[in-house]
Length: 323
Image (cartoon, rainbow, N blue to C red):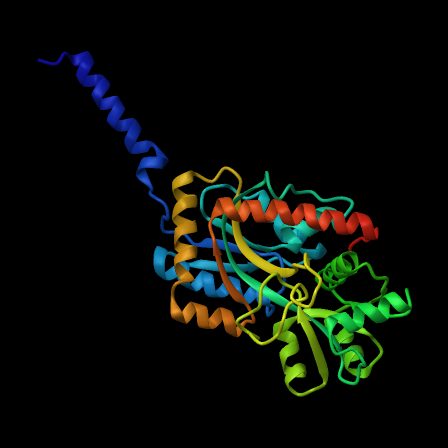
C-alpha cells in the first residue's frame, strides 16, 4: 500500500510532465515554419526554396512560409537565421556563396557558417558555363587558354556576380593564365557585352545562358563543374577539355540554427531528401536550371568545408574582395 508521500511524488511527477513543453507540444505544433532566403524573390535560390517549402508544408502538415531577406551579399538573411531559436520553426536555404565564399570575400563576416548552423541537406547543383561571343575565334577552352598565354593580360572576362568572379579566377589559377577583370553591377550587363563582343569570356549559370546559346548569340565552350549536366549532356567540362581540377557550380542546400534537437534535424533532413525522389519536384528543379544532388548532413558539411578551403585559396591568390 502506497504512503501519502509516495502518492504525492507520483502526482507531482505527472504534473511536471504535463507542464513540460517538450512533452505537451510535439513538433511541429500548430504554428508556421519560416524558411529564410538570403536573396531576393525570383532567382534560382528563391525558386528552389519555394518548391521545398511546398513539399514540407504537405509532409509536415504545417505551413512553411518563405521569407526573403536579401541584402549585404546574403549576409543579412544568414545573420537573421543564425540568431533564430533552434526549435525547428526557422530554416534557411543557402548557397556556396552565402555559406562558404562570403567568409573570405568580406573582411567583416558576423557568422561562422559551420558553428552557427545545423546542416540539413544539400539539394541541387546549378551548373555554370564558359561563354565567348558568337564570332569569337576561340572554339574550345584550349584555344582560349593558348591565346591568353600568348598574350598575358590582353584578354578580359566579365564579373557581374561573386560566382562569375570566383569561377573565372579558379579557371585562371588552374590554367595558369592572366585575364583582366571587367566588373559589372549585375549579370545582364555582362551578358549584353559578351554578345556584343566587348568581353572575351564570361562564366554564367547554364540556365540563364541556354536561350542565347540556342539562338547563336553566344558560344559555349565548356561546363565548369566536375561532371556533365543533365541540362546539357553534350557539353563537355573544362576538365574534359584538358584542365583537370576545375570544379565550380552553385550548390544549394538547407540549414537550421545551431543546437536544433537531433530528432527534428533528422526529420527535416529526411523529408527534404525524400522530395528529390518525387518526379514532380525533380521536374521543377530542372526547370529552374538545377541538377538534383541529394546529400545528407555529414557529406554536406564535408563539401562545405572543402568549398571554404578552395575558395579561400582562390581569394587569397587573386587578392579579391566582394563587389
